[in-house]
Length: 351
Image (cartoon, rainbow, N blue to C red):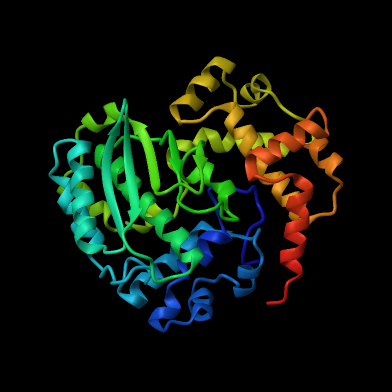
């Protein structure tokens, strides 16, 4: 087997959308995607299965292969390459900062120098701090590459920031400047439980008081960090969401039974109050995890099965068809029947 069909969003697998994204720019550089996939032990036919998942370890291997083959830490997604070593110099630029705010400002200035296509800015909005990524000029890749460029850049900035202060920095909310990609169900685990699409530019919000956190890393820590970075902070699901993942696993494993927070707390050997507090610490809630799982399963069942709409709604725990319709319309902007019809039409198109 070259891929896993375990729980969607599991830290052991990565949605195929991240694989197609990371491959989006390599044709510009004359590389063969099939050869890279073969060396990473990822079957190329999985690119045509929008619900496929691949092991994180093989995705990390692909990440490094592309970096090394291109001598470009930006995967040929941008108008000029980020030569190998760019990330190390970015880390060194931020390492001597006194606070997270200073570190983020240095990261933004460094990226302004090396990137022509995307611009990074740190803003204040009330009590929130906001990482803003805007498009200065059109990226030289297609839609999948544009999505991945934003995903990758935010993960890199966010992951580096959390490492510098040695503290989890769960984002409160992220708005993305593109329509929901097919792997958007994973965004809760990769970015934040609250996320929106079709925004004018990317905005990632977190508590403003965190900007005063001191930078705690030193040169010795950086040397160890660079052994696996940046792949280690841009390919894996966030480690500060470990409990969220376990809650998600219990909810899905119990289906068609629908567990409430007290029942999941018992299975995790904690009190409901402790579970609620620890999920808050991870920047999410029991309701948000449950809704994200419902959204993921609804879109999967509508696109991959002929299961009747009424049964899908019932299996997901909705009281009636109207409640399922309202929820699904809120998630996707269209009703479940229209979604299935549109997906069927797209699948029937040649090529």
